[in-house]
Length: 324
Image 1 (tube, rainbow, N blue to C red):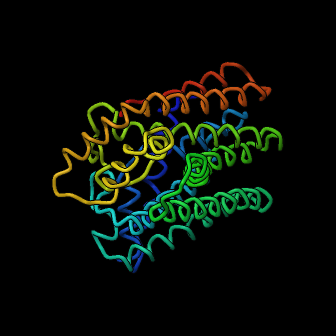
Image 2: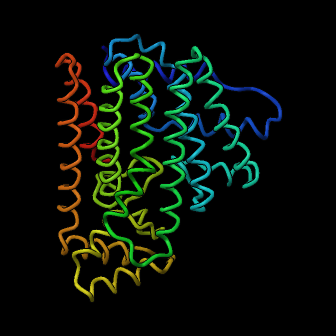
């Protein structure tokens, strides 16, 4: 097996040779644009890595890896419209660079392209891959709907938030890994185990993302510390604080998350201080450890070489242990 970074590079090389240059340009240029913005390429990397984890050449998984990345980016286009976000990875979002109608159409076309790439496989394999994508796609839509609902609800619990990110983030990561297992034609038990591993890694990954938005190191290009607070995005930190804070602290939180300000300096400081006083950062890290541990125990159940397990563990730990 190769390193995770090598699998990422293999995918990027494949992606660069798959750019669509068709008419109408207004439909396909936004697709090329969003796919060129980079990102971690986490999901396709996991598809390639998992394929070789179960003993099959990663090259066979390249179309599926591209399919999952296209689907992921289509969801980002639609998410940005829903959230009215102007920036994605330091660049203008598709609906801002073009317009909302074009963004919706390009995002829809990307979902169809997802299935086009899966049809590169023989019918039985394609059927299993499409079933995995369908299950994942429904979960992502359910998670996004819950996320939208949470914006106007005042009674959301921590467990409900965890369910939402399990669907919206965990399902994509889990499906990416299960697709690799399907291509490798491993047992149904292994497919189920690697899916469960991905769910728990996805939960830990999203919780770490929530944590780093406020408590990370120097922000990366296109990202600012406290961005979730500025946009009033309610993450695990917010819901955990509501669970353990005093009544007066809850009132402050709810009030600050209900307003948009030109200068957010005091808002970020007040909320940060409240989170620290309530012990939210430590509680978040404990939850991250819990899901990481659960993922590790699931990996133990897979009957495969220890050096392969070690690579997968190290990659998962690098994602969850990142500081930016």
